[in-house]
Length: 148
Image 1 (cartoon, rainbow, N blue to C red):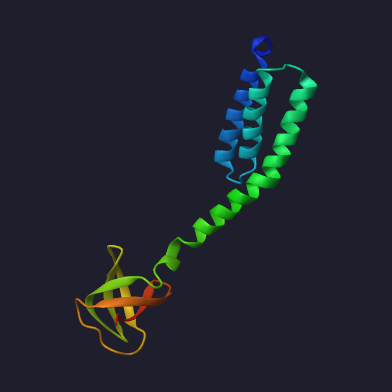
Image 2: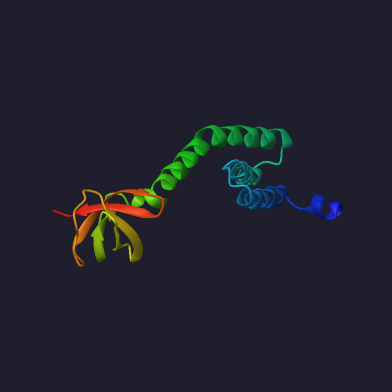
């Protein structure tokens, strides 16, 4: 096996290492191994022009550090922004349609084609078929007010 690997060109070995690092990133999504994989692919491009191990090592180390310190924070921030716009937070401020009369004791609304228990946040009764705005949520209950 090692005799076969030693016969491979350097760029192929670097591409294989990059693919393995991408697979490792999928197993541990920390946006760390992806940067090392990108550095492997970049170094593989450079290895087409030179096979000097010192130069390739420097290219890999420098590109890894640059990607980790410049690219990783951008990806982590993007993931954090996407995470904050999902879940229950996306319902607040959205419009819903009343399926069963909503009162302070309860009712049912439809939002994003989903059926939710709802409570009137201002104490009023809201008739079936009217539009409401979701003001907040507690557990699996939405607090709504009539849309003006």
